Length: 101
Image (cartoon, rainbow, N blue to C red; front, side):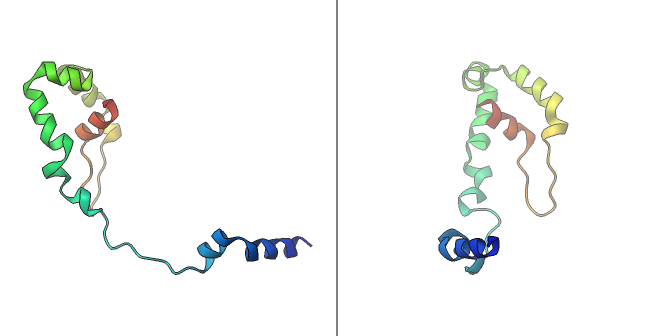
């Protein structure tokens, strides 16, 4: 009886049918094209160097002083640093900025 209920569920569930019987579509890129030029146009790479030159604006934006930011970064860097051999990883500074923002 239980097997019959399972077969009935398979026949009536469109989501399950899709997952089991649809063709797999392969991705064409590892990274979406929007993010390919993140280092050139991204907020961190364009704004962070400018904020470092203006400590008051840095504090307004990050809610910590530059000294505090780098102190926190020094303490947590080993835990948030990533290594990858096939693509460029997000640097710890950028990870911390995203977390604070």
